[in-house]
Length: 371
Image (cartoon, rainbow, N blue to C red; front, side):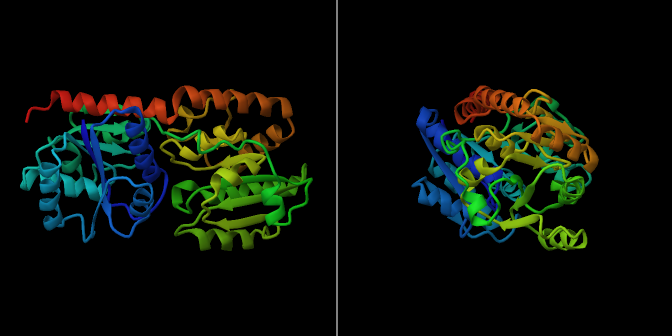
């Protein structure tokens, strides 16, 4: 198979990391004869992929309706003799469809979808999801499939291949006191944290409300750490100030050393109310950090309640606080959940497991495609 992965994303989040993980796994396992990443210049994924000596083809992103690039994309596919084009974000989706429709891009299109978001409210958007040149839509969880059904007539085109993480990247699973030292946190204080972009569906408001309840209960000593950046960051900071929680909640900003800092958490608190799966939960498994997460979206496909973590009611800070308090005070349960979580990760979400499933879905499209 000769594979081309394409994205027009300008950010670095779980989906962009996934593209890199798949490229590495496909190469290591010998699944592909040749492969390329097509992405916008001057973006995080362009920089990361280039630094790893991957075959990267950059382009200057102008708009998702850039017919000049759509024409160039068809030419790239012809020149590289690509067997399948794997699309990773909405803007690239539009460009690939235009290339296929107007410039006879000579390969089947496969879309990777990770968002739980309706696409049938806009006629053009609905059309591109139902476009005949899209031979398969690989979704990260079943809730993603369900949200797409009104837009996609042929439901058999959709399948589920879960999230992926690299356990070799997250080898540290014991505390060294790194965060205690960095933020001058007393050694007898717990660290309860979250790693997420400050966006609406991550529901940081419920996270802050949960901390407010825990601080008032005062049943254990803790500092609360938020890692990430995003459009709602200033709003959440203002909310923390209004709640008089500035002495309790630490804003760490964006960090590149997640494999080093995540194991320092005593508990991962994840309040996202519409999460496709939550790749950071898999990273918590790898670091053997106990988890309390929202029973929302695709999270129950990653967290097995009372076996690999605890699930709380969406948007209910009292329930989150109860679960956090219960888990912090129960060492035996924490040990059981983290060990089960680590095994669940190895069985279902490693690069080896997910890349094999992904390759099989892509190969199925290639096998059925007639040039």
